[in-house]
Length: 95
Length: 162
Image (cartoon, rainbow over all chains, first blue to last red; front, side, top):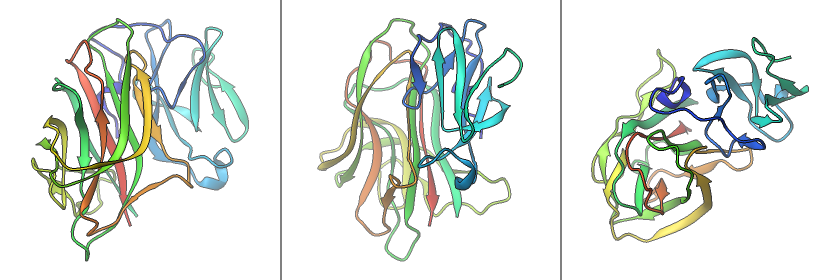
């Protein structure tokens, strides 16, 4: 399911400060105006980070290719916590 | 287990304290509910402010709400046992409360968030919030601080029927 807040914002834009993480924040906005959110699709618990649920990572409401339990903005970059560790957004994909 | 969403988008919230979303399980013979996610956020102001929020259970008198019919997360799934309702009664769900209701509230999770970042609570596997059928109390996300900008709010929750 795609909620309105998962889409690129129309009303106002801002850049999320460093060290903000979703959850507990609802979204991460980067300097390109893109919004990163956790979607509502689950990953199998055996594939998720230990002790957490893992959801699809959405960029502007579209699946960004990985499942993660949290997304964080740090040092000007967006990264996601997966079973395999941190994956950083390169501008086109998480690597 | 089927999952359902109760949400509202781009609405104007009423004076806090107020229920943002409230779901009340049905009578005892029905399905128990397991809450996976609550969220709230706004996009009408870029002025930073801290707001208080809580997830709580509430007994009658329930809040007055805008009726919201749960949306099934699977297109081919069956409809929820919960229906839309404005009174917070058993077996109903609603969003964007307009009257808090005098019923006692039991705090489950108290929190605060920045209005620019929004609020998302997702359970870990051991933290799922269960609302048993016939429990005579609903579960809701409540905004406790009056926001400076009341427009363009999104709010909602996701639950499973067990």
